[in-house]
Length: 250
Image (cartoon, rainbow, N blue to C red):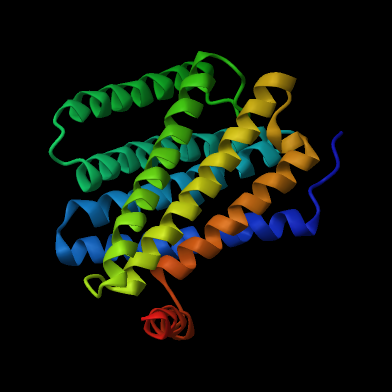
């Protein structure tokens, strides 16, 4: 039997869960008002990948030994949420950063079909509470990590462009800083998922049963949580600091 994760490990996971839940709900409420696709997609992406997908699958793995019935139900919930979240994130990356590249549409359609195929495969297996390394595991990892790191690269690229405009007074420094924070948060989440899944592929052991991987995932989740919070629900003191820093350097 593997030792239970320490309290500090759960702090990072809980921070990521709560912040993603708050931010995701706020974005969906904003999408309800604006009727715009970007807000809807990023809200579904944050909720689906974060508290629903990640949260439910971790909970399923923890409950697998003592409560297999609820664990399988959690895995159904988490797997569907993760599939929706990844698809929404891919659509967001396409429509926000490359709306004039119609060739990406076909790749998004293929990604959606791949997600459906993986869910069908999980259903055929009875939605086991721990994901095993098979063709679906590799594909799921590629789509999840790819969506997050692609989004991170695009946000950081846009931050570089906006930062140059800030220097000459043509861009809002607070909005520009949000691109940096979103890029950092998406990278932390994507890199954490990549490390955990690669370790499971190499060792054949679920990441929830490897203490140092859990600790690393918790740390990445905490970084992502802080970045998301400052990007979407920033304290007034933080936004003043960003604005004052630009003013003092002008």
